[in-house]
Amino acid sequence: MKKFAKIFFMMILVFACALIVACGKKPNSGTSEGDDLSGTYDITVWVSETEGVAALTETQIKAFEQANPGIKINATIEGVSESDSATQMIADVEAGADIFCFAQDQLVRLVQAGALAKLGKNASATVKELNDGGAIKAATFGEDLWCYPLTSDNGYYMYYDKSVIPEEHLDSLEKLIEDCEKANKMFCMELETSGWYNAAFFFATGCTSEWTSDGKTFTAVTDNFNSDKGLVALKGMQKLLKSTSYKSSSDGAEFSAAIPAAILISGTWVSGAVKGALGANYAATDLPSFTVDGKEYHLGSFSGNKLMGVKPQTDAKRSAVLQKLALFLTNEDCQLERFEAVGWGPSNLKAQQNEAVQNDPALAALAKQNAYAYPQGQIHGSWWDISKTYAAAAKTATTDDELRTILADYETAIKGLFSMSTDEKEAFTVIGKFAGYDWNTDVEMEQKPEGTFMTTEPILFKAGDEFKVRQGKSWDVNFGKDGVAGGDNVKVEEEGYYFVKLVYDKATGTASSLTLEKYSPSHGWTVIGKFAGHNWDFDAEMEIQADGSWLSGEIEFAVDDEFKVRQGLGWDMNYGANGVAGGDNVKITEAGTYRVKLVVNADGSAELTLVK
Image (cartoon, rainbow, N blue to C red; front, side):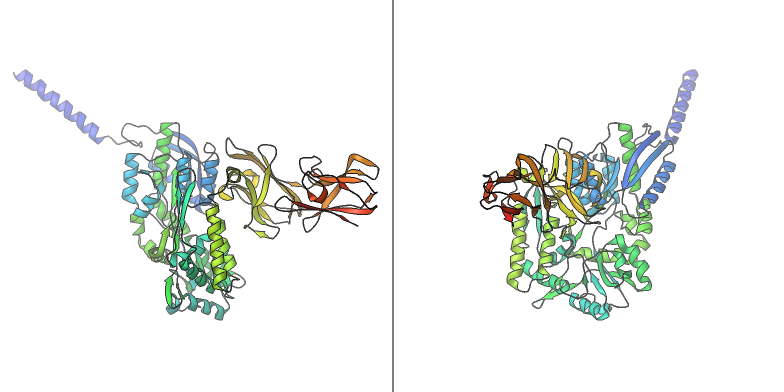
């Protein structure tokens, strides 16, 4: 009996020791006990192009390694703007970054393209616990969290020079304009150049623009800009548009420009530049109100978040490390470090309570303006161009009828997005700042052969002109320098007539090249026929003129000679008598020396004449 009791006591002692060892064991760095995430991981990270963000991210990744012994991260960190990263990811998910930052309005597109890995149950619970409700909503699609909130500051408000603007004038647009005009300083707000900013006037009067998507394309829009409320918005906008102090800009450098700004409507991303320029006169607050027919309307704004996503991985261990890293990079400490470095507003609840954050003038102004802000949802890519046109037109309008016409044209344009044919949706166009255009006109391209798109006529580009190519007159699919999806603008180095050429793979949604081809006779129009000893065996070159017409050199014609004009030394495009496409030969009834002149109209019709 004593022997049995002794054995039993020893068994209990061994079991207790085992429990003590197990309970005292230090957990490893995995997502659950027993996981081993040790290893070296080569990854690509896309962060904001804002100066200092890439270097800070590198430092934060090293801190992650220190907090997670055994995990080594070899990170290639690249600056890609939050507005372009989604487009680049969607164009080629496999070639995209492993971790990337993007604006909240791109979430649905990324989920549908398979470019985001859904958060697990534990990670979702942690993110929801740590971040504000608006940020959680921004990171949610359906019932699931798909990314990590990075900021809660993607909105705009008013910066001003305290030495020029009296505090008692801050809520009156009219008084602020008077102050700027009196001081011969600028009131800067992007109205003609950005629908994101000019929507503030429409939100002020209660207008809305809500877009419905079936997950693949936009199916409907509910928009009441073309209304009595919209008319009031344009009247309010005109007060600033017609002011001598107005400048269409959101650049913080305006406070140190040749004619400096006294007021700038912008966001947190320029706070450093504004502070540097204004010094002790630096101040920020919410947007003002404007008055129409005795009623005041407080300017609204868009609000939103920056988010950090993780690309789906085939290796579960690698996926766990990337999710762990993304959670770390968006934690309280990292968000506060970004606030201190570049002034970004945290989404993390504890970080928001930080004394420095709460005392920051820019973030305080944003918080104040958020009472009048509308969360930015999914919006058709073409809306951003269409919404600029009413501001530009309102600048010169003088009557209510003209303003109503502007709003009616706007409504027609957005409704037209839903009546586009399949061919129109798939067609590519050139848009940019060239030939008198300022990112407000799409120049058509023709597919010939399949997969190669080229402008139908050469474009006169000047050195320094810029352009991009986009599909369906929308920014959802666009290509820039070197054919990069969502890439930088293509900048023209040398003045001349060029064709824009895009080589595009529809199956992968990628472009292999975007180039300029200088005009040559093989692209242009020529005269061919029976004249001057030739018998339909010679092409006389025509040169493009400043007005876009084409003109041949002098040709000696005899009575009964005949000719046509054709493009690219082929017969696919040719014009004959009376400018008819593919029409009868032009017959000479009076001998003489002539030049042949061709004018091709936008609708494809032509005028073909002889100039003596």
